[in-house]
Length: 390
Image 1 (cartoon, helix red, strand yellow):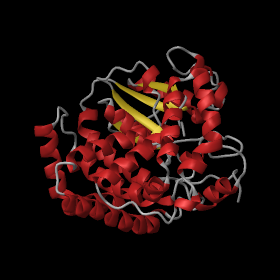
Image 2: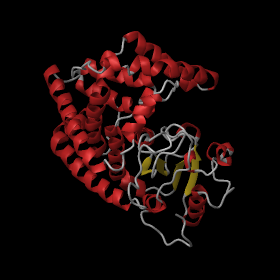
Image 3: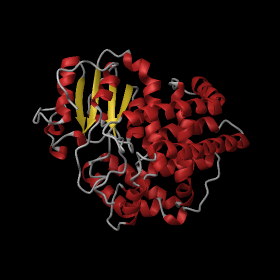
Image 4: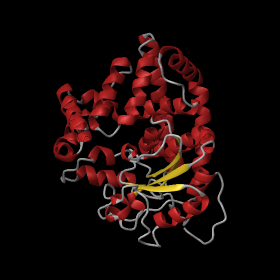
């Protein structure tokens, strides 16, 4: 296997994603119910804290239940690196992260530095045996490490909310709660492996190749994710869609955000150069064109964005009153979904059938998402189409 083989695919041994959809829905329903049973009381207390001790409006309950799992997964996967990274290393990478977000030449300089230093300084193999003891100080240490990578900013924002809540609790209670998060995450890792193994069969080999390569990559931490993180992203789609479905269906206008890897022309897609980011219909065989045509017929907008891990909302000009359907891969859709949630969009999420951009493949390939799933998420039903568009 090499980097011409996708790390994940929803098709597995089928020519349809229907099998994956049925299995992910079944797994999602079961896991969300278990999260409620395990963390229902903790979530009640957290919502009470938000209502009475902060100026934040409480969101859908499912999102906070998911946070409990997310803290546990990140603690188990990255806690050792947070514990093993030196304070000067974290501070240096925090500065690089700030520079990177300023864009232009500062981003280029930051990425050059990150390609040489980020993985060595923040995810060094020598830290694998380090242990992050559950507690508020350790949670803050993990948050700062996540922010320093510049790959987990939105997840870190969620964790900071929980850090504020946990500061009000006795140390023993904090230790117990974080330990519960970690234990549930271990259970999730084992059960999700059984449920989704055939869909993420390429992940381990992909990460092995990238980690063993001497080629500098500024995105090395981002792409070298564990199977459990891919499975967490898959579960996030179920949770987000369930939690935000009702407010989304109450919106009067909707927009579908597609990644540029779905365009036949990829980086050279004319829509990326257009001020409004809409399809220019340069190719009738492109799925972006086909979805745009359907959107015109059924009353929703389609935009193509350059980077879906952040959904590129800063430059999209999308009104917050619109319902948004974000399409992304199983390594970035969690972060993209949080970006939509943090900006108060009523959102739905759809997974790409596989990864295909230059971050995951040696030679970028055109990706696809199920048209029927995009239409169901956008319209609440699958309309009768004039012709086959898949």
